[in-house]
Image 1 (spheres, rainbow, N blue to C red):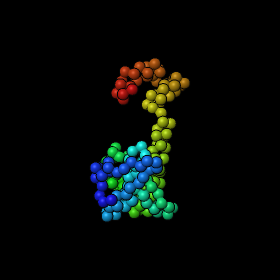
Image 2: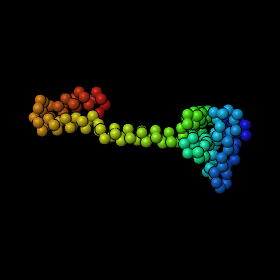
Image 3: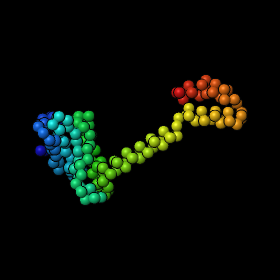
Image 4: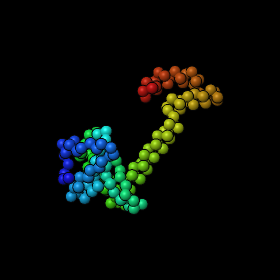
Length: 152
């Protein structure tokens, strides 16, 4: 199949039983392995098939569901994956590492708590040590000036 268009993608038949994959077969080397998978439900999603430079095994990476991910975006995702492959990196491993890093950052942010948590800790320490303003004064200042300014 030559270059794809939205009309050609929509015209691809829906398989009866198992998913069916079609590859664009572009002469553009940056689109090598670019394809679409169609499920029996009719759902379509872009993919890129490649050989991992890390393990030497064939892999397939999902690039997003069509039409939420446009044909142009699917091709761009494929090109991004090919750039990683050219650098000797496995795109799936890179994606998984990035996701793990994002989860770790989110977990760390949750552990740090909120401004309100920090404020309550501060007030608790004031109560414990009897320093400066009373906790009641500090809470009043917070509710009047700080909370509204930071959107709490």
